[in-house]
Image (cartoon, rainbow, N blue to C red):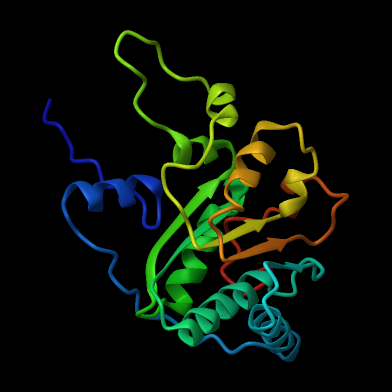
Length: 214
């Protein structure tokens, strides 16, 4: 049986590793659609950019479900990068059910010349950022051991936690990994419709082609 080549998903951790192994850099993504932000989304972009200019380390965007937090947050990130005129690495962490939503949103809105890297990870795979090869003769490092370690093997300048109420349990491994990302980040985003809902309740149906909840 003939082997089929592995093609990693766009903006995935595997795509990043493949580019590095091939000596390639991240290519800018031209916008596939013309996205017009609504007034409340533009207000969010203005407030987020103001917080960045005043030196705040992060921003909590807590609009209700369906008001377009994804588009507002990504537009804010692009504006911050254009203002800084410095190459930045971006990490987006979200539940598995909205990874595809983020991937399509970034394709639709595009990137700019200041985006050095974009990685989208679900919460269960955060340990990938902290993975290092175990010493010779030792077995594979467990997630719990990784969580006890220090800095991440890859540093990101902008970190976004979508449906960030998933981190409300500070003793959970995902929360411990997330906190370790704070040190190197120049700006952190937390997106959440409500801290009381299960992330699965906020999942956008795969058949939904519209702008809702982006």
